[in-house]
Length: 290
Length: 130
Image 1 (cartoon, rainbow over the protein chains, first blue to last red):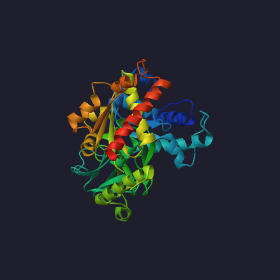
Image 2: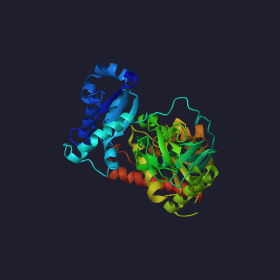
Image 3: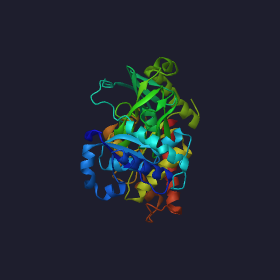
Image 4: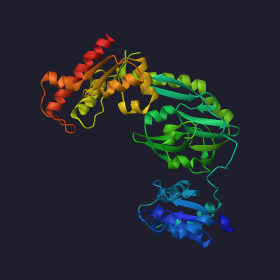
């Protein structure tokens, strides 16, 4: 294994759930295969101890559950996460759930060597630097209702009725939520991305967001494979509030059948009219009148 | 439905600020829902174009806690003349309310004053909307 690409594994290590125990066990299996392992507890109190290892390898984070403590720890210390896995997602693929006991069940123990191999082969999260996609400047149309101003891009985006968009360029799309969603949800405080490599059908969940008011799934307008997630958004979910259509993108997808998908989507002009009517309808529903 | 913007004093240090905010909420949620669009003074001052644009296009009533008239001042500086205003300090004098009001724990008196201020706002709204 080339030293520069040596995995440096940061497991969740949670000791009160089975998922935590599995993440630790996976880290130990990868250690046997030559990876370095970071103890999250020691890292908290003495991060310098792991500095050299982190500089020389690629960080693989293994979270136990959605709380994502290992990811949070990495972000808090400004570490670049190259690869990421969540034990609960791995279990879900096998139709299994994490048990409440912190002791790993026999059936699950048997799965771990294969999972460790898979983790070694995980693709990097971050999309290629300097790619040519999604660099086109975006211009907007807007309309006002009461004191609210709603923006919709003028071209290049496609929307579903769940107010989620796909910005399509070539065989790729970036997905996100509309200005209407961010205004309705108010301050977004959490973005849970999907796994890179996840196959999406149209209307599948492509991550979720949580605001001070509500929690919402990002409903994919397209089908394809997740090739990247917006790590900046994980760290700063408020980007959806400040720039929902560009910096606030959530997921990048390699499209599998956009020609079919687009039949069920609205283009920018269509969504502009749809949203205008939707806002008025909501008002009428709430207060009556025309 | 004719709409009227109501911009409330946001005074944190005086009880009149609390009364102003609560009275506007009463008007917006209980007495004139749909017709009342509350404008957020801090957001307005911070430059929110939605708030400022609304105040340019629709009549606005400023509800101020005291003679500093921050809500009225901000509206007139950034959007245009207010249609009407309510000065709670003046109303309290007029109503002979001389007791010290609580700014954070509204009791019977504070609630009573809040209701009366709400009715003053409604009166002005109804004059505007006809």
